[in-house]
Image (tube, rainbow, N blue to C red):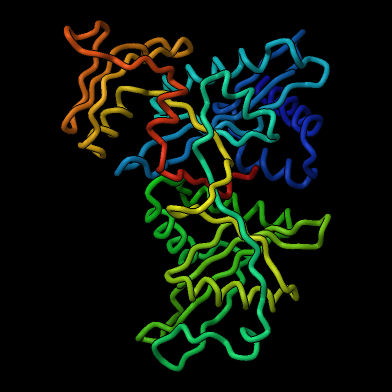
Amino acid sequence: MTRDIAAQTRKLWLQCFDDTEEFVDMYFEQRYRKENNMFETEQGAVVAALQMIHYPMTLFGGIAGISYVSGACTHPDYRNRGLMSRLLQRTLLRAWHNRAALSALIPAELWLFDYYARMDYAPVYTCRRYTFTLQPATVRQPERVLTNAAEPTLVRHKTFDREAYRYLKSRLLQRPCCVQHTEADFRVILADLEVSHGRLFTLRLPTEQDKHHAPVALAILYPDASSRAWRVDELTADTPAYARRLLSLICGELHVDALSVTLPAEAGEAEEPTGMARIIHLPALLRQYAAYRPEADMHLHVTDPRIPVNSGYYSLRSGQLVHSRQPAAETAYTAVTIGQLTRRLFAGERAYMSLMLN
């Protein structure tokens, strides 16, 4: 029965998404887990499904667990019947039982932002995009990014490289509100790069002992077959100079003059919405937020009809949280839905996620 459900879910994926057989095979071999699969059936057939994938995330000064919704789809013949809404409701309750802080997802199309908003998801994950253009001067006179005479080395990785993963992990952990990737996740990303004909590059410099090269920048790229262009879905570097040097060398390696780059937005930069989140375990999240923002002084009457245990009265003051089912005397509370509160808590945080196989 379990194998049949997996086979039916795979078949449904192929019916609903424009993915290659190679990608779907890779996903169901390496990412799919029966315990993470949520589905709805009609007459014994899977007609709606999604996967709940656990990721750690840097959040409000610590690490929190999120439940990422992957591959949410409904058979074309069964749409507009409320199946996905029912499935998402069950998914939220499962995430609560799994003690996830948040549920997160990336809408496949723009209109789905409004659809998921009805489930109290808020567009909190953002990015900035720009086009890196190789300048002739960069080719003729490479930018000096070293303190010695050594030249940086461009390395392409086709298999798992522990130094590359450790570097990516260390850099992701420095982002204050960012989905993290475990070593297992990184191996899945490498498998995805293989079937998608993508690339993983690092820029490396000799260490003082000159025994090996230490990464100082990393980029993960995917090809856009329709335009014969390349997009950089992850770029991180010790310095902006290292990042520019890495991109310049990649342009030379791929014989292109420009790359489309996606990065976390910095303060003051225009942000483009990419993903949504919904609070799952509200008391725990507010307790973490209160410690992270001790200056926060707020009194909230929160309603959450889909996870009723979140509903109640919350007061944050001096880094402490007070939670009750009844309002405190002589306290003025601001009424908010769980979706409105998600927006409020994440305002200005510039939450970021990348490499989600979306």
